[in-house]
Length: 456
Image 1 (tube, rainbow, N blue to C red):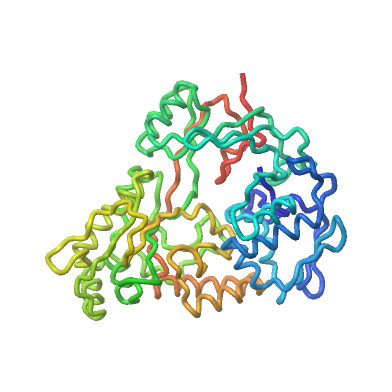
Image 2: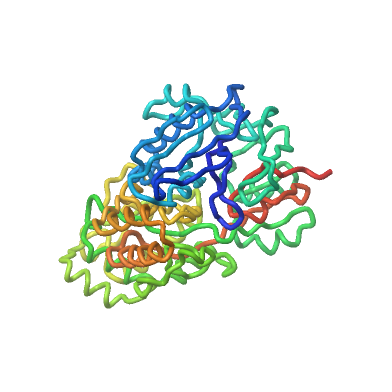
């Protein structure tokens, strides 16, 4: 439905999408972006620089990634109807990564939609993408339809960029909470595609002639998000004790079963992201040291204050990760009640005030950009460590790749020293598709349904 000025190619390098081209001048402090002409919104209006300026200004106010990117933006202006100029406080190529991200995306809306929303939710779903919004019936479906006036790029498809073609007349996104029902629906042909299938179904799916498994690798983190703002987890030593106690292998095995679907790796970035992958600080990952955990708890003066752990069973792996980690923490004497008590079973409880906020958010490739949303102060967990914040600012401003890597190494070291959150490991999702659904989306870490068609 929505598009931005830039997107990612197959190597996760930013390339133009709604932008036609760009130039950097003033020693990298000014980006002049020429917009594609003839691009229409789903309401028929042609996109201009006024829409772009309004959309990006709102993004800088309300989105986590937008707020981070905006720290280095001095001004944005519409030079003429088809040209936008972004003035930076310091030279940086990070602006292109920010504008290309698809999570917390800098989507372009009509100016009047942005004006009507203010700082609140957008009230009309109007974009420039190959599919347009039709309706949302809660608990039933979201319906999209082909946008007949879509203006596609002329280049060949390249990752998330290039030419996008809407072959399908209509797409229905159906919420099906039960995983078995999801898989059965794809088996019978009621659905063409199913997401988040249990990994123990992998061999069975491979044996069914009408189906094809799709392993999304890499997919995301599995994490525990600590509450740095309130409660016992504001103590650094207690956070370090939490980190020291855990053995990640049984935690990940409980959630994902088959080793084809997880790996133990402490890096903030995936190993596939060679430019940013780092081993700095990872000695603190997967310590399995309960004696150290007990010592740290004693030094912290921990006396059994309640730890509340919030999770969900809508994603079964989240619950299982939490359950095994809870058992390990009890063995390390981090308890949910005074000594002699037990840590309460992890459970969905969104209104609980608690020492530990557990939001296993997955981080679906939010780490494509070095300006990872999960490292930001205003992301869930409120990890606002002073040196980390300063280094993130330097990272956003420094155009030199070698210097940026040094900064990333230090940020990752702080991630473990200060325990920004607890990383259990990387996981790989299992989706299932009917074989008649064709297209290059199968090789992407992101689901998309342009350039996808049904073969009869």
